[in-house]
Image 1: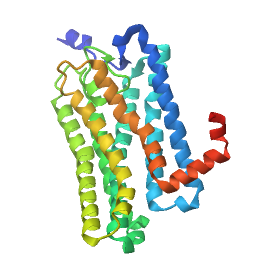
Image 2 (image 1 turned 120 degrees about the horizontal axis):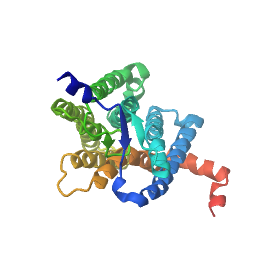
Image 3 (image 1 turned 180 degrees about the vertical axis):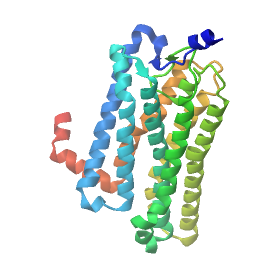
Image 4 (image 1 turned 30 degrees about the vertical axis):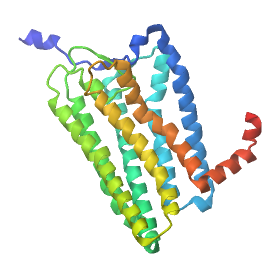
Length: 317
């Protein structure tokens, strides 16, 4: 029995084999993902620079957009460089510790993307429904009442999920069918029961994106009800809210698609699941700064002015 226990050891090193079925075509994935990464870096840096450099944009709404841009800028850095090197040079190895650290920050920043959408919805609620008290409500000491609980929630829930994943024994395969250390992709390699991991991950989904989605939806229902009942300008409400609703809807669709793809596997290729799992983290990093830059008039004006001063349009032509 002792000899048997010695032979069964838990793996501490893994290989990320996402899109492995593409074979010799796998390195070509470097091109579209590196292009999207470049777009993400440029768009988010530009958005941050414009908001930081323009004093007229130092209001709560734009500060929250800048915070979202920081998250969108940071999130890909925790998994995309390793993924691109894997495509280009076939560097697939990662230690269990490195895998868990990557998992923690990827899922934590993903949770903060949801929380920022909720804080943006609160900002719009105070601006439209209680405009006389807007600056009072959005003052830092008061607004921290909404920030700190969600901040603690995200830190603790994601930490619990990662700790439970690290306690699992991996005594069979050590090849992760993914391009980064996604929770379910790692846990499905366990040789014991993973019921607790699946249940806790499901609770995390309901505590973070689902809860935030319902709170955001409730906020916008109240906002539009207030606009319709008080006779305020509908155009103003739509202009300030539609951008957040578009970002929220796109993010939610991708998150739910990625989540369901791991639980509805019938006739669904592994590459499709991996693609949606990457996109729910990476696509907002490219999409958010572009949609905010285009739809937010003040930001769009300063971006166009910056690009014109730097002769970017002339260089493109």
